[in-house]
Length: 87
Ligand SMILES: [Zn+2]
Image 1 (tube, rainbow, N blue to C red):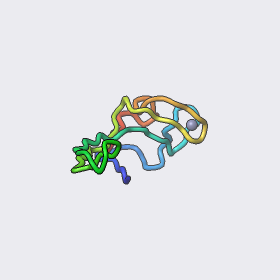
Image 2 (cartoon, protein in one colour; image 1 turned 90 degrees about the horizontal axis):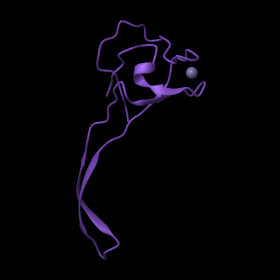
Image 3 (spheres, protein in one colour; image 1 turned 90 degrees about the vertical axis):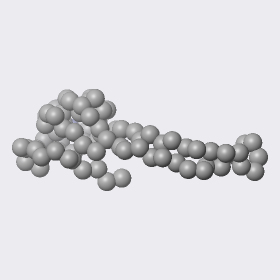
Image 4 (cartoon, protein in one colour; image 1 turned 180 degrees about the vertical axis):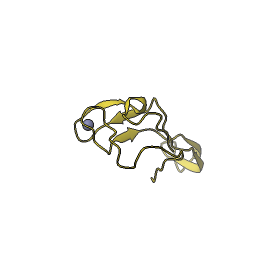
């Protein structure tokens, strides 16, 4: 899934993000809400999906964040570049 930032930033694109090691790339974990409409399929153990509604994926200051470089774990709000938001 392609994720891009939606807000203009005053930071250069190679600004460090990790507060521990200064890595310029980090991971942000978020989730997507999916609403399935199902019906009974051939038997009771198999439900047939009628439709699915997939919500938007986005992150905010409270999203879980990890640094693949040093193993640091925190939240988006803890990154060196403050106020980072995206979807
Ligand atoms: Zn790091």
